[in-house]
Length: 135
Image (cartoon, rainbow, N blue to C red; front, side):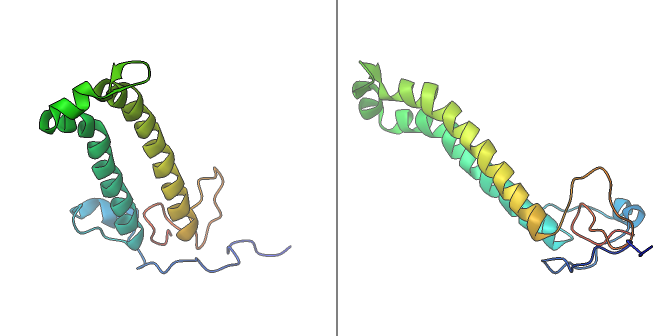
């Protein structure tokens, strides 16, 4: 029988080695200085998604505040004011699209750092969820 303790291929992204779970829990976590390349990339995706969400959610309201004539007097879809259509249709649709974009980016990161979410993991050189090497 052959030894199946190694994955057979090198990870597609360089990791900094990570730390063991016990040592990781004792360290302070700083969201402005992540510990691993995976955490840096994932945090970048989270921050960009958050900024896009702020623009999507508060954009129509802010536009109505700064340009009330344009947003209230412009009618679309059989006479509805533009600010109503943007708030009622655009905002929920954009939030859904942001969710899909985040899931796609997270899948891209998982494949970049060779992270698997399968129930059964091989022992040996499996990649930890934080992007470092697990023991």
